[in-house]
Image 1 (tube, helix red, strand yellow):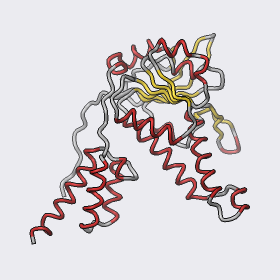
Image 2 (tube, one colour; image 1 turned 180 degrees about the horizontal axis):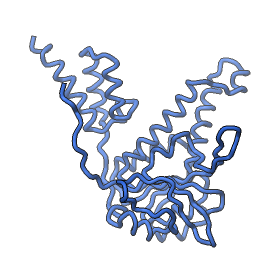
Image 3 (tube, helix red, strand yellow; image 1 turned 120 degrees about the vertical axis):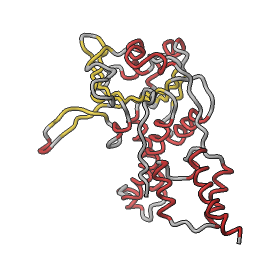
Image 4 (tube, helix red, strand yellow; image 1 turned 135 degrees about the vertical axis):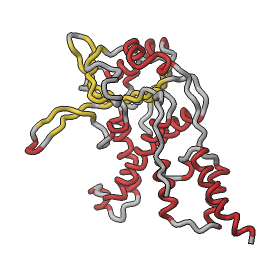
Length: 296
């Protein structure tokens, strides 16, 4: 069997960053500095910055509904618009809202009142929460936009409850999603970012260890052409393609392991979460399987 590895090519990636810091450090103010931004505000933190937001040609959606957020991300992903940057402020509230959503569902369907009150819903509950958060993660990565996600800060503890430092207050491992992670601090009245993580070639980091947070510095360090360029729409699987792939699967015998491998490769859980190109490859594969059967 031939090996499938290929020589990698350099890619011009959009800015994808997570920033965290203590209350009052100015995370919201930092995020809304970006021009042409679409801001998902989960704490009504933008209420005091209407002038700044309007001057930046930005827009705000204030919501704590996970379903609304996912629908909005899908629209940004698949519909032409003039926004260059997505701000989610803060992801902590999105995660909390996701848990609350599924808590209400499981409470309604609990077999006993005691089970509803205890709220110990087990792996099925956490599976639903993680599925929603994974869907959000997937769209944040797919978006051809700069993505700035803020997070509350929490203390990190090691063995013996010894404090090791601070980190983002979000779902475990959320920071792995991002190419850049910054801790925001207030030093001598200035908003300063400390670079916690940057994915880059050895010796080719774009950001210094610490720098004053400003839109101008991001243009300087990351590149104006990347940050200001127009978003490209992603073609998602059409309803017709979903119907077709399900029809073909009812005719062709394909083991569940193969289908799960397709989902894993595309990093999805359902057919309609695939791109148009990804699902078409599955359709073409199934049609090739059917051809010999139809020729008989």
